[in-house]
Image (cartoon, rainbow, N blue to C red; front, side, top):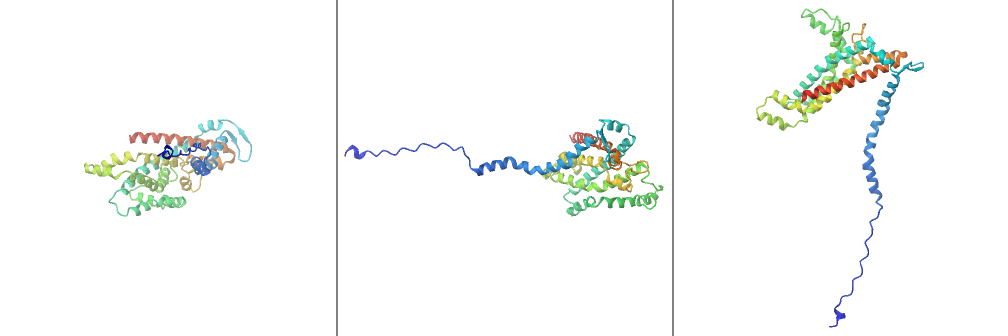
Length: 323
C-alpha cells in the first residue's frame, strides 16, 4: 500500500477567535439603570412633599423669627431680639410650665397603662382578643371635638359627674377650669383616654414579635409570669418602647386641641392663663396678633428645640433603664 493512500487529508484551519464586543444589549443597560436609580424615584415623592410642607415652612419660620414681622406691614431684620425678648417673657415661661405639667400628668400614666394593657392583651388565655384589641382603639377614632364636649360635661362645676362623685366623700365642688392643678388633671385625663389605646397597640405589636420559645423555656425553668415580663418582655421591647416614648413626647409637647376646646375656644387657656400651652401661646402670638408674627415664629422654634431636647433626654433615660 502506498504512503499516499494511508495519509489523511489535512484538516481545515480553525477560524481566529472573535474579540468580545464592547456593545451590550439595550435591555441590559436599562436593567442596570432601573436597579441604580429606581429606588430614588420611589422615595422621591416623600422628600418632595416633606420639602414643600415640612422643610420649607421650618426654614421660613426661622427666617421670620429674625425679623420684626408684621403680617400686613413691613419686615425689619432684628437678629436675635425676638429670642432675647422670649427669655424675659413671663407668659412664655408660664406656657412652658403648663406644657410640662400636663405632659407629666398625661404621658407617664399613659405609657404605664398602655404597657399593662398590651401585656394583658398579649396573654394566650385571653378570649375574644380581636374584639378587645379593636375596642381599645376606639377612643383614638372618636373626634377630638366630641371628646372635649363629653369631658367638658364630666368636669362641669355644678352638674358634672366627677364633682357629683366627689360630693359623696365630702369634697366641695371644684371649678376645674379656674385652677392650675385641676385644669391640668382634666386635660391630662382627656389625653390619656384618647391616646392610651393607640400606644397599647404599638406595644402589643412589639410584644408579638418576641419569640414564644423564650417564654416556653422560661416557664419550663419555673419562671413566674412577672419574672418573664421583667426578664424577657421588657428587654426585648426596648426599641418599641423607645419609639412610643419619643412619639408621646412630641405629641405631649405640641398639645393644642384638647386645652383649646377645654377653654371653649379661648386661646389664652383660662382667665389667668392657667393651662395655656406653648402651642397655644405660639398661635396667639403668630396668628391672633398679626403684628407679632416674627415673635410667634421665635416661639415656634423655641418649642422645636425644647421638643428635641426632651426627646433626647427621654431616649437616654429609657435606654439606660432598659440596660
